[in-house]
Image 1 (cartoon, rainbow, N blue to C red):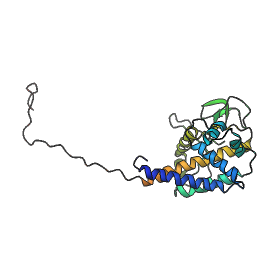
Image 2 (tube, rainbow, N blue to C red):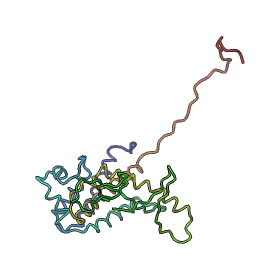
Image 3 (cartoon, helix red, strand yellow):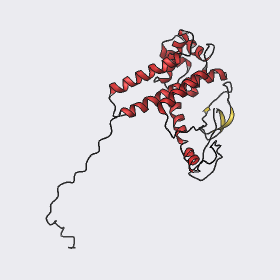
Amino acid sequence: MSGIAVEALLGLWAAELRGAKERLRALFARPTVAASASAFLDGLLGPERRKTGWMRAEAAGDAGPWRQQAVLGRSQWDADALRDVVRDHAVRALAEPDAVLVAGETGFPRQGNASCGVGRQYTGSAGKVTNCQVRGLLVRRALHDGAMACSTTWCPKGTPLATPALVEGRRWATGDASGTTKTELGPGHNETRSWHGWHRHVTLVMLAFALLAVVRHKADALTPPQKTRSRVRPPSSAGRCRRSVALPAA
């Protein structure tokens, strides 16, 4: 996105964030809860490195985290509906004819055992069995040592073998996306004690990540193509070259 004008990039950000909040607002019956959800999204996208309830509340100017906690807990709204909104928006903005769906595992190390889903289990993020939260299926094949891992596919009968091989090779994108999400949006910074609250938190993180992906995709489309420099040969003499007295003549 280095080639896009600052004004164009800021306008793109404002338009995409406004659209995301409009889609989010439509899921809430009460305007006050919708406003809290919008502030929640702002907190996820903000510069704070920790996306906890207190940090998000401070960024929103609230005296405490109660409004942020209400979004994840007692307020009435459907996280599955938001999931569908995120999916539809991402498909419209980013889909390609050869797009594929890859389910990848990701995990969050935890110290305690009160959070939902925490237990001693394997997670690829740590590379070992440890106390952590883990929300998907790990599908991979190690290329550096030839070790094989089983992959489950749902290809139609007659699909060429090269097709699932190509799909498997694209799994790196899920790891890249997970890393960006963990670094920028704090999916593991939730403080929920129920699957209900966890599901809401992660779905809002998905909305924030979809917004980032769409902004980058559209910004790349606005970036002017790089100009290729023509190689100019330096001037040279057509005469005989001088030779060092230390070198014999050819």
